[in-house]
Amino acid sequence: ISSVGLIAAAIRPPVVIISNYQEPAELAYLTGLAGRLGVSVSFLCNVTESVLREWYGRAGCVVYSPVREPLGLVALEAMAWHFEQAGAHGKAYAYLFRAGKRRLEQAFMSDAAAFFGRAMTQETAARESLPLDEADRKLTELLLARAMACEHLGRQTEAQADLEKAWELSLEL
Image 1 (tube, rainbow, N blue to C red):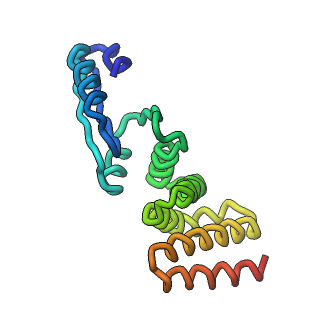
Image 2 (image 1 turned 30 degrees about the vertical axis):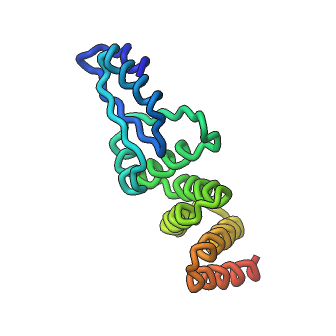
């Protein structure tokens, strides 16, 4: 907010702060700071994944200042979204897989499965830029990770299908 306040008022962009938690005292401080500096600010809390992706698409930039979440998930999510939109399939695939793995490590299985699903949509185009054995290894890792998330979510049929595909690929490696 302070940095945006340094931009000339005629071209100053609005600030949107999206979080999964709002501390009342912190919210009051930021609202007051924005008012003193003439910065238009709005706060969104607990938005859906689709709304978050819409904001990534509208953002001129994404600023991430972790206080309680040092894993870099916001940066991974933002980069994955932008690479998806740009058609940079190899990079989108890598960042989506990485974001899914981070969510899996934190036991956010639904989020992990969603990221792995999005990674699967990039896989065919991403594999074109990889040696075949590396592409198959990465796909095997993705299938195993997605199977784990699906198993935890009670989606046994999907988990079993991913495990079978991973097994077939592993035999070829």
